[in-house]
Length: 273
Image 1 (cartoon, rainbow, N blue to C red):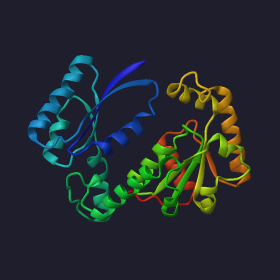
Image 2 (image 1 turned 90 degrees about the vertical axis):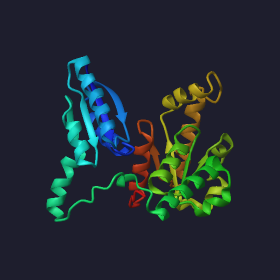
Image 3 (image 1 turned 90 degrees about the horizontal axis):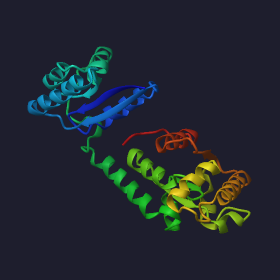
């Protein structure tokens, strides 16, 4: 398998350039990549240091590294372009075309994509995060009145991380309820969930995958046994169908994909905060 070094460089957190870079590189499945992120590259000294690292990679491997860059300062961007790497500059790729189309000059402000200057929006994310934590795993049923979304499923189907992701990325007030054996023996939704039926979304998973996940947490336990996993997933899916609860099979989904699919299928307009 061919190998290549990849650098993500930014004068801020590098989150944006990492996200785009990873997405693009998934299209090259026959390659093996070694990643390195260089955030907060916001001075000539740091640019020189990054240049040395990139050129060092080229001299060591003989292959030009791929460099994804989202640097605002034009002088620092030019410095990185002097490297021996294949530099893919996000600002050069998008801003000139947008500037021409919109007839508007960009402000070229540092770190605007993850700015905290809007206090109300930042506060909304923190409030949503606190809500997700305080109502996690079926505690504080009274808080369900404030929930935009309630995720329901058996243990280890990604309910908690999905709620946290929705809170941090979109300010969604998301809670979750884990279905227990007692709940699954019932012929209807657990009592705390019944008043909030319209906000419930179910999560299910292939029992074999669930078995592997639970084995890592509690190896050799009844909880992790394949028989128990088959029993629980069959029961919860039957409950979802009987109660007409929309549900999603998350077997091959990442947390980001789960979140996006739920928002899309619910008809909610995503608004990154």
